[in-house]
Length: 118
Image 1: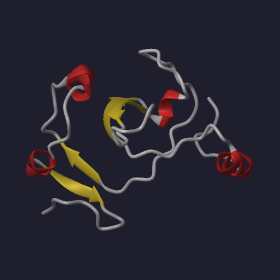
Image 2 (image 1 turned 135 degrees about the vertical axis):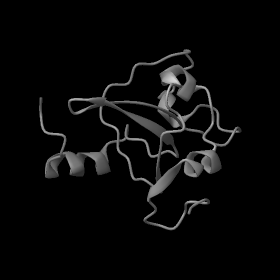
Image 3 (image 1 turned 60 degrees about the horizontal axis):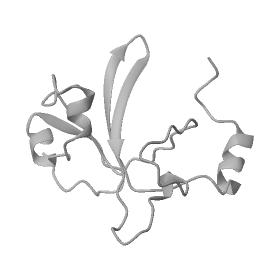
Image 4 (image 1 turned 90 degrees about the vertical axis):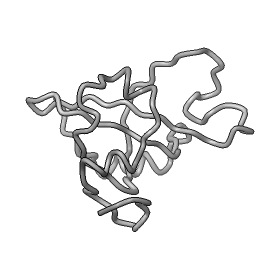
């Protein structure tokens, strides 16, 4: 398996690639052991947008996009309140930040954007 750290050439390519998308997103990450995590998330743009930028111009219901996920976290919350939800349950609910922090903790808030905390 190749390294997960991008090379300088890859970083330069990201800046110049017309297919790279920067969109608001949320993402649940779940430990699967042995260096593996599963994740599910969502991204929303204003409703008046014709197509979400991650649709790449397609109106088909589903797409498989293989590549890299570039994450610049605004904040991260660690919690056990979602235990037992499964990926399907996580995918179909919006994050309830108060509930997540009530039984968890703010792990990262580098820009002071987390609207809840302890």
